[in-house]
Image 1 (cartoon, rainbow, N blue to C red):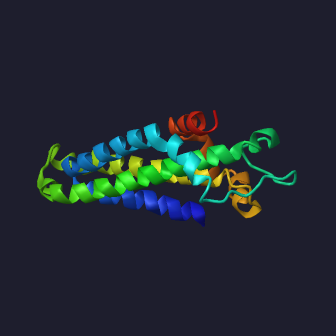
Image 2 (image 1 turned 135 degrees about the vertical axis):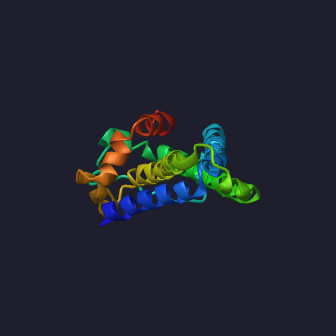
Length: 178
């Protein structure tokens, strides 16, 4: 069921990006990339502060995590706070980008590639949404709760996104776990 939901979310993101057109979607994509870079440079400072406000479930001997060993799971709280702070900064940056995008609405009617304008625009928007989905599942994979971990024990969309996403899986692992 979750697979179908995220599949339709990606299809919808492609559709909405295609309707915007390439010129307008470039504003959103550049804003997202800038938000991503800001989040990447600022998340560690916020992570230390989040420990005071957001609880993290303790890993016990009975905890079974799909992607992390028992020894790695003992330090998973730091990675969790880092990932959550990265997500919060990225989401705030994305909201600012969406607000700024309102002022560029006239770009919806500017065609860069004539009839094929919708294709790269849809792919760019799908990449933005896929990054959010990957980060969301990456954060979920760190929570030592059996019902959440059961999502990742089956080989489906959620486990694929966390472990085998091109570029993103390795980047998030380097940022949060190393």
